[in-house]
Length: 282
Image 1 (cartoon, rainbow, N blue to C red):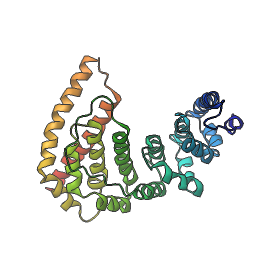
Image 2: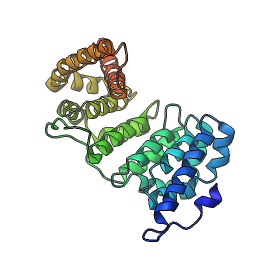
Image 3: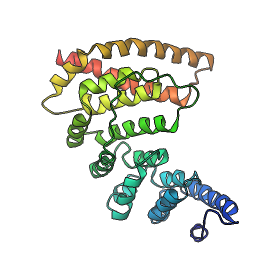
Image 4: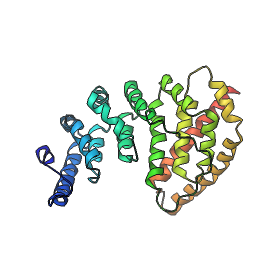
């Protein structure tokens, strides 16, 4: 199978369409081959650099990155080794550039809950290398239909930053606090109200970067969040959305969309931790 993927694939040639379809089928098989199987994941992991190069070169083959993600899914051992491979680490910088949403999804797998701090730090350095301004200074308009790729990328970027600081990685939290102050983070949460997943992304950021901190400024940061009028206006709006999602579940026999579930998880995690910290700080 790998031998087939090493065949020439050049745009503009007569065989480009047929070979692209063959590559797609090969990657579909490899994805299934390693799903939930750590032995097969390890066997395929040696080709990660090769697959990353193909993803970057042949972005029209949409399941290459899906296969790479499946190789590392729920496999902390392989994820930890990944960040010791200099060639792969160099390619990570290319995965965060532009609108490479699949690339960000892969990096989320690398820094998934329980990941080594070294993984978080490596990915965070790549993200900061973009020098992207993530503050929302004005209200985001409600999207018509599906989100445009640029908005999806922004959401994944903010969530990935949050995952890079999850746990006890205080050094990474300090870096992200300089990237987006507590006031700017709350303002961004407020301005994202009309885009639920973007709002959820900033809730995740506040939860991990500010509420999950162990530094000496925690009380000051909590007061900054508590005394921000935008935060309380956001809480009021969130109440309406949660009520709508609950009604959606009733209409669909307890079933809600993946987006709704993700929104509820991130939002409730943030506000639950926020209210608990308020009681603690006094």
